[in-house]
Length: 587
Image (cartoon, rainbow, N blue to C red; front, top):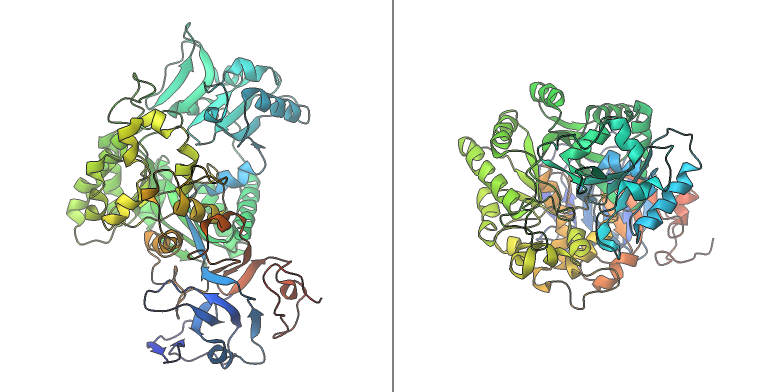
């Protein structure tokens, strides 16, 4: 892990031929790395794409032409021929569930399953490999993908095993499906009261049927053995490795607990954590909040971790009909969804967050929840008129048309996930109706008001690959190209806007716009190298495009071994070939 030197920045020099150079004393040891032979998208509106750049001590020293940049090198400089690839600022996912993703890599993968019976078969197979009494967990089922689109039952799941408690989390994370063994361990019966902000699905005799929504899921989760510290360490390392492989250099973790933060610090101290982490404290953990509010924000710990925000929840999810709506669901007229936190409690907590110097990030999906959160922010922001607080609404999926302009006016950031639109488009209009759906996933309407949209995936709710988010943002289509022309195509983002959502706008959402999100002298050398130009390429190329290299703080943390064999084999500087990305070489 590179040690950042403190360079005295006295300004930028723009040479007529295109070189942009940091005016400072270049370290006597010289430039660490030079990248040439590609296209470098600085994301700065004043700079055209460049073809080369120099890195020193984890930061960008200069960008310009190949000839200009090569003059900055010395005998010790590592030179990388990009072979026509495109370099963008290190991609950032602004809404990611880091530990949950790492854990999900060990669980049953249920995304894409087509029936409850298929899942029963997977659970039965796993049960044969585990000792009796061991919890079986999985994630990703979605009854909307099944021919029979009703919620499943514990009776069906009991066919897989009666010797193992089973808990399977719905794709959105807002509902769980369990077997009878799990309910018995939790002591859940027909007389169990439904928690506020939750729902227990029941039969005509009032017996729980095995699906628990939002706050009701805690009735089951509380009896699951707590993971060990070693479990958390394993999950975080696995999540980080996969993030780097798909080109992510930073994630915003939407709800971190104390163990996660403790383990991350230990990994950073041992130089075992290569990417960057922006953490949101779990707002349900009062002890954790008190500890951090007394201590104050953690900024750039070890050059890797910042914790200066808090994750709260206003409502549930649209897919499980827990999103709080102003009017009833079009396909469930007796239901307006769930507010999992009261307006009064949110306002009190948000005020405490502001006073402690932290950033609130509130999950709100339905139009009722979004309006409530905007109301909360409007009142809570009033005493802090001069402060730079950047409150966020996570997801902002369904908005009343009259509320859309309030985001820019209040300075509230809608942190949205493009692939939510393309996952939900098959059934969203059934939930919302033809008129209300026009305010759903309303990216263009928000952008037209002057709002910016920090982008992300909500992984493991959606897949972790950021190129899929760029594709969804530009097309509003699924991978097969459906629907033709895109779902409400007038809401699409342009190529530059989509890339900004994962770079410059994501950096702003984390108060990092002066060090990350652009390729400029003095900025952190966090870079993602891609086989196509994500701004100008045909959108249909993005899902199959290659991440060729991921660089954090000037270090190549991951690279495609086929496209850059010279890095794998440790060839000396200057020995790279001119082979196109991903192609074969003479080696």
